[in-house]
Amino acid sequence: MALARRVIPCLDVAAGRVVKGVNFLDLRDMGDPVELAKLYFEQGADEVTFLDVTATVDERSTTYDVVRRTAEQVFIPLTVGGGVRSAEDVARLLAVGADKIGVNSAAIARPALIDEIADRFGAQVVVLSLDVKRAASTPSGFVVTTHGGRTETTLDALDWAREAVERGAGELLVNSIDADGTKQGFDLELVRLMRQVAAVPVIASGGAGALEHFAPAVQAGADAVLAASVFHSAQLTVGQVKDAMAAEGIEVRR
Image (cartoon, rainbow, N blue to C red; front, top):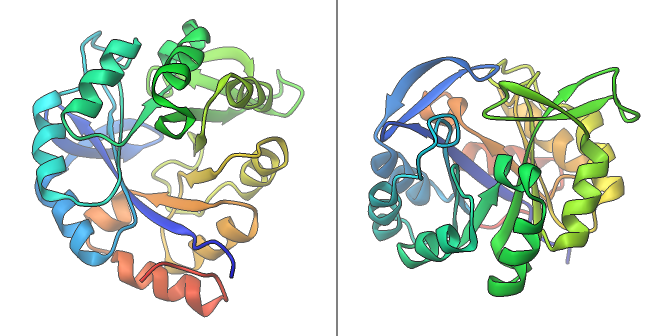
């Protein structure tokens, strides 16, 4: 039997509230993270991802209290990212209920951070979060950004993904900044390219806006699909997404 593909609601959090914008701009309030996480758990979400989207920009740590309260209500894997700069930050997040830790800007600034986390806690804990834009400046046509998509690096997205996996990243959360919040569908070319270079699971993120957008991402190579605004606005439920994927012959968890 094929491995079941996962459906993952994403909680982008700023100042303790879930927010959502378009291309990471014009953030608007979408609700309480604990309440939303509990709702998605009840809908059958396979995991929940919690990203403090302003933690790195504001040079502050992820809100541990919100993580703790979320973990008390949600009994599925919880991935937490934003403001993680050291193995000690990881230890603290795991202690309050996180299962996996997303790293992005700090790992780009100091790639050895990935090695340190993987060596201490295991590769299964390390999720490399990539905020990727299309750019003619790199060989692959995709460049990595930091600080919530605000700062463009010189890193080719595929080269960085390869390096991160070699250093111990156990999963890649690949978010298209160009598609983010547009509801026009995932960047399937980006998903395909990441699948080709990475032997670890790939999570497709950015652009989900309709039921028909999810199956193509899996068919392009994604092991999991992640979405935010379509769930927060109650436009779609996790169950509806799983039904649509199953109708396309994709194995999902029930």
